Length: 380
Image 1: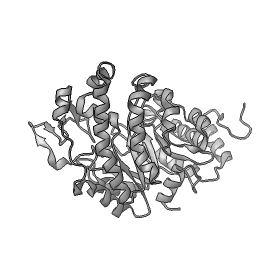
Image 2 (image 1 turned 45 degrees about the vertical axis):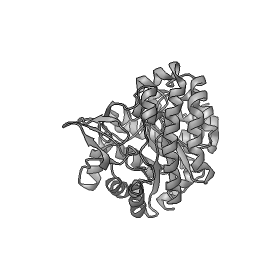
Image 3 (image 1 turned 90 degrees about the vertical axis):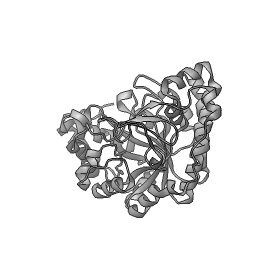
Image 4 (image 1 turned 135 degrees about the vertical axis):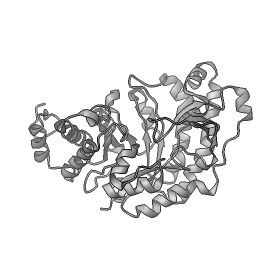
């Protein structure tokens, strides 16, 4: 199988020749290790070169660039701050790669909303990064076209605190922001589908480590219809889809899966998300993407812990396929290359189908891990 075939097969709930490997490459140090230069900004050429050099089987490329906007339209405000074409003010820091820190927002009140005008989603250059990634990918890599979810856009143009306050005080204001986001990104999805992108991903964080951002009632009434509407553009066209959603969203899972997307990423272990429980609840109709601990294990964990957690992830989520191995968030600069590499090498070594359960069990025992993930002869 090619990398693209492997990725899409797993995403659609099937069993490829082996477990695909993938991650969001949000580390310019990781990319530099692979291609010999450090990117100043997240861009298709560097990401694709790194993806191909390492052998990952999917690459995330945002529509119009990483943040969904044309960086040539930035307006410098001072040495460290600039305004993007959406009107958001960003500040450059030493720690914010691949995205700077939003510090100013164009739409705080209804009066701002009346004056606000979206950028033009139809500009020809917005497809440049996607087309370049497709040219470089060939059949080796699935190009994952990314678009912002409606809550993400609302937070970036109005501020997190303001949006969360308005959900209680003025929910109509917030849903108007959601509508604006969909007006833009539904066009983006359609254009990527017309260009035959392999996969559509919607990044939309919905929870803290401790629990979801807001009540299930607010989620269902305010956000879910707009999230479903955005996914429906791709689902109706038969294009594989997945949701990227950090945080503890156990309370939302049933409603989210009812949207009909194919995969869920990253099933954040450190936020109380369990690969095993999600698999038991939804079966192979949902591809699971994740969930090796990126906060502890891949930062300062021992080799034994990394191997054991990777193998447990494969056993809990991928015995019948429908699994893409990744961290439980993204690859970041604080994660040593060697630890990320060990995770992926372990998946390559033991992830071939049919899984060699005896070899996996022996490796787990060698790591000192309890063998209780459905292996033959494991204790009930």
